[in-house]
Length: 347
Image (cartoon, rainbow, N blue to C red; front, top):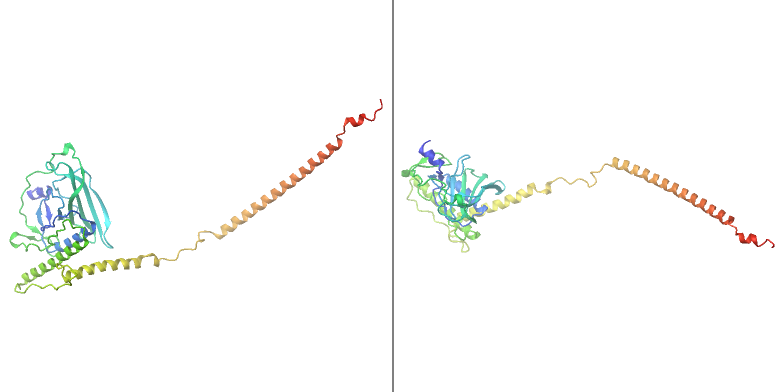
């Protein structure tokens, strides 16, 4: 095994070269947005080789993991088994989430508080791009046997491997330091900070980053074409109600995507809702009329038999009552007192 392959086994991986900032939280919607933007930026930005080691709280990374490669060693030991689940991210997208908690850096942390979530689009995106977010999760005590047990060997090796395009027309091509494109040709920094949950701030930041990306791409195209004398494009002035950092193009593109998603939901509901379903069957269609008629005739016969049996019982009881009445009359006639017979005898 070569030194480079040994380093890959120790956690050397392809990372997006630009910093993505520190983020306290990251929800599913923003993870999908960042993965889609990362897929677009990765077509023109080469990935660099590097290690992931003890990332701080809030660190966000974009990695390229080819095939079924395991997740690289990040210098953190986790006391919980990693779980994974999938969530729908629109009509045509599916987001896969891997989560593990109670992590700690041996010899550094006094408690297991690190949490790692990694996201990738299994449908509707590039499944080999993995967005990783490190945050503070629930705190647990560190097992004494694992307190000072290292996760990897230190110091980490230093490799000056050339950057590599992972997708697009230049996929597989290496970029050496002398020909490295201008810095900031990818997604650009995305500082979200403590206001990550504010929708207005998020939209302004995303639109600003998109407009910066457009300007940088235009500058690169002009540089490649040798027309550096062309003045930079002047952004159109937006209305006073909009943020000053939002360009007209970025705002229009954001609104178009939002309206497109809304209309997609409307037409999906119209096409696949229950209004086009066939009419429901009649409520009595589950019964068989012939079987019901046979059962009705049988019940009528049973009722007539019960009526006949009841009439017979009434006749038998009436005859018995008459017989008992006759016996009672005969007994009353035959019961003569002895006193009445003795009165007619002379003494």
